[in-house]
Length: 159
Image (cartoon, rainbow, N blue to C red):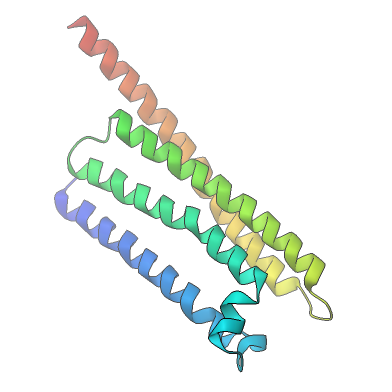
């Protein structure tokens, strides 16, 4: 892969991370019930916000692993055990995100009161769908790279 392509993709990964972090910090302040709340009330009296922040940790871990895979591609080390391990970690992070979303959806269903939970549930479905796609793609690429690493190591042994 060309250096410029990997650098561009690494910049995109960093921008996605910055955008997600900005959204995580900005959105609770504009949410309907938190418009007139203090920072303490927003961040320390709402267990759903804590669930969302804890659930975002695997997302940022997966972004870091994607950055590492792109670094390996830029160094022509994509067919290495490290790249396979990074893809495996991305897969596990996507599964963890799905687990957190399920817990958050249960929280929404149990605590929605008189509000209509359809918007929150739909957002959870979208995040879950995206995570399933990422987990499937990471598992597929992991298998392909693992086969390539195995073939490479067999060829190194015969030579």
